[in-house]
Length: 140
Image (cartoon, rainbow, N blue to C red; front, side, top):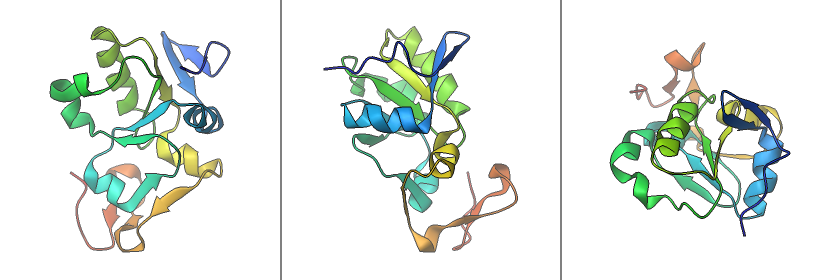
């Protein structure tokens, strides 16, 4: 059964943006949280929720058919920018049960939802564009 999102989130430019609370509840009801971040980004922090699928945005154009069309997909990234682009792409390929996680993992954590962290890979930096892990890996 696909959760109903008609009365959830905010719709702008035809894109439904869900809060972390809404996304968390929908994952419990069977929605899939599709984490579009790179492996480098997910090494440090991952969403701690039911039905999380790590699916880097760079793989989307060639492998999008691996994503189910019969379940609600909540697209997520670091702050909610690339996930909107991915949503537009998936919509053009016939996906209708899709939404964007507003604010990505940053707002997820800020709103008090758990993340899985690897202390050895914790990011540091003044802004998202300058993040580096403690081990010195650069963000690609």
